[in-house]
Length: 257
Image 1 (cartoon, rainbow, N blue to C red):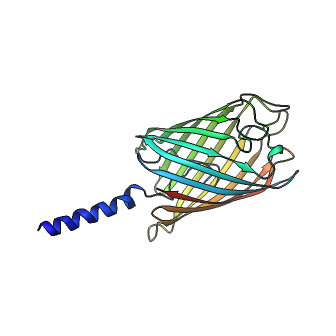
Image 2 (image 1 turned 180 degrees about the vertical axis):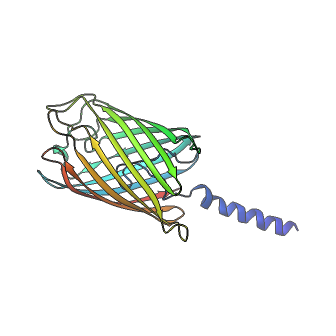
Image 3 (image 1 turned 180 degrees about the horizontal axis):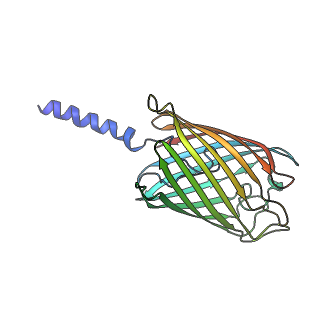
């Protein structure tokens, strides 16, 4: 009896990392794989390391490759901390906040869980430090996040504003952004390893006097294992300034520890 009890206890211990450190392809993180996030935070005690490569083909100017590393920590109950940056192949032409090499520190706080009558709400606060190329001043970000489920469908809305600490040249002192999206688990109910996401977005242009970049995107998140999620996405800005993105695509990976 004691030997069987020991075996059961050992089995439970070995199973804990799989349960506690699992990543969920159905939860949406910023830019993984497109510009939308849901109102659910990483569980307390979990850590996720994420990275992606963005290709940006602009209507005017050079095409860019951007590496997007990110660390997400389930620091407290209902609270996740984030460290992220963007590293661009054409850093001197980046306009607005989040210049190439800037370090961004963010906090996402889940205000409530979703019920039959109330959507899930969260709020994000972020600071962008001028560690990058041609960057000055500390930028601040405030974003409201909403997620609402309809059966297996999920709808998402992100509304935010960024304040530039030290605008340069023709840069605005700040700008708003609005992103709406839907997501759905492909193959449900026979399989549950893939989630498809589609979004529409608009944001205030980084330069004074320019029209808003407005576009659409579609992405896929695939559960490779309990600790690994692969993602890919693509989209276009069909309206906006002369240097808007005619085509962009991302490929990324998220790993849980």
